[in-house]
Amino acid sequence: MRIRLVAIVLLLGIVVGSDVFGCVFGQCAAGQLGLPALDKLDGFGLMRSDLSGVRPITRMEAARLLDEALTGGKVKPGRYRRLADYLLQRLKDEFKDELGAYDPDGEEPSRTS
Image (cartoon, rainbow, N blue to C red; front, side):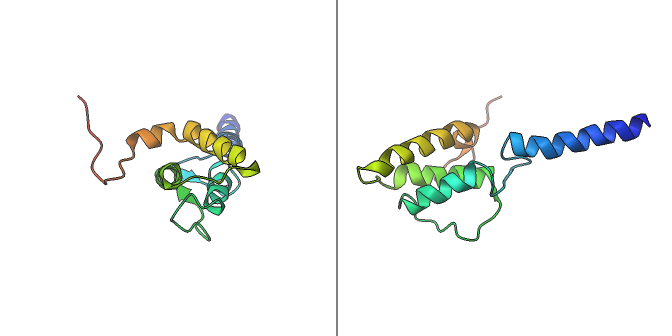
């Protein structure tokens, strides 16, 4: 009985946790902040990569795409500029660890002892 209860609690934690905490196990599912926000930024023309049909993506790929959006260009002034700035900030907060480890030149991250 106790093992069954522990198994149910663990399973529930994984299922509920995946919705609450967004990207889980290194993957970003379509319903969480990462992909819809990246799709919107792609629609604003901030990225060169095409996101259509790419589901799910890893957190490192999301960081690469975010870096592309941050360096890709500017949204024209107007009503979408504030939305783009808001999405960029939320994504920078969400993927700060991955952005810190991401190197656009493809070099290995430096390791400290």
